Length: 117
Image (tube, rainbow, N blue to C red; front, side, top):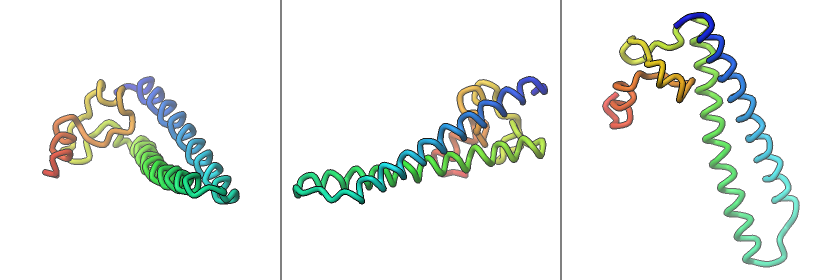
């Protein structure tokens, strides 16, 4: 991977991180609004609880993705970006184009998805 490609991935990762942090912040704001207003109707309160729970689970997933993006940025700093953390082979460029924070090559990702690594 050349310097230009690495810089392009770095910009993508930073933009993704920024987007995710905005989503987490928006979810927290809507969660605070939902808890500050008590719904008068039992059905509205139930709906509010479901929305709050969904928002909580979304923010967990988004925080996990922020962590993965940060790890990719760290690997970039150490020169390990684009190298599979499981087997040490290069992560395919097509995979990095689709998922710039990818930790595994396609083969190792398939193994991980099956729980074999």
